[in-house]
Length: 129
Image 1 (cartoon, rainbow, N blue to C red):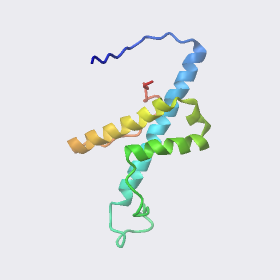
Image 2: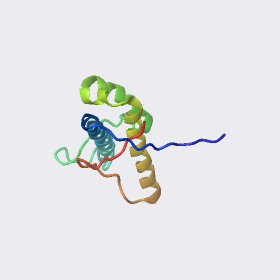
Image 3: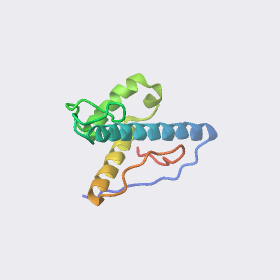
Image 4: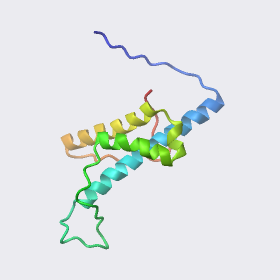
């Protein structure tokens, strides 16, 4: 079986460009939100519960599971209920954002350096449909 991918060059109007830039910005926000959840989970496990400073350390419930790819993908539906910007972007595009983050996380674990970084405004430049 032969799988083929197609890449098309598009020439959007000004209104379409604004809409697509809004989608990219929403994808960037989702990426940063998922990365924040991941970093918070890691930060909460850095020291033992009995020796942490309550003023300086971030403590989460020890029963809270690692924010895995499937868990964060499930959370997208809940986030879309509370945030109208997330509803504007197609669901497959938002799921791909989470997949990209977790692919980056896996590559970081394999290499041992290059922790995933937050994306600044305008730095998220593509999405997948």
